[in-house]
Length: 193
Image (cartoon, rainbow, N blue to C red):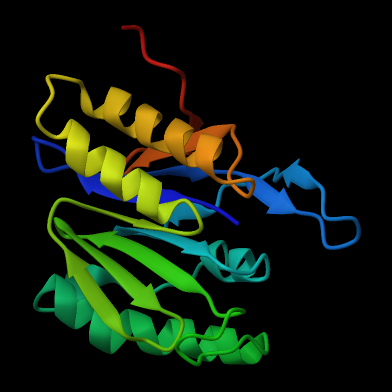
């Protein structure tokens, strides 16, 4: 129950934004998490959707260093995916494609954006990508708004708000983070128009 988007801005900076929604398994109510569903993992941004337990992985630290890989795809394929699968297996999370309990990962590294299925299958996206329940609406909004004169922050805000309006499992507040910024993700504020 989420939406996370990653994108590359005109300056080549990588960003990630998403909601904090959590479906309470005890009563089915929607609650807001106290932590973000993505992080700066030390040279790359990493986010997840699918299982709350995956947040333990996102925030676990001790990630491979992308500077040691010859290129972004090589880092994701050879260094990151094996770590993600090993940590999922340690938490007894399914790594089978199409399993409704599986996790999707979103990675922004070295000017590239990747979506990684829980079983390690990698998809590359050029300008932006989205994961989670709100993915279709967010992706459609970002693609459509590309031809506008809107700022990237406004495009992201609109994409997240549309996802929220169309999906019961997507709720603000929304967090935003640029790769290389120090500290935790900040709350995304509605841009002035």
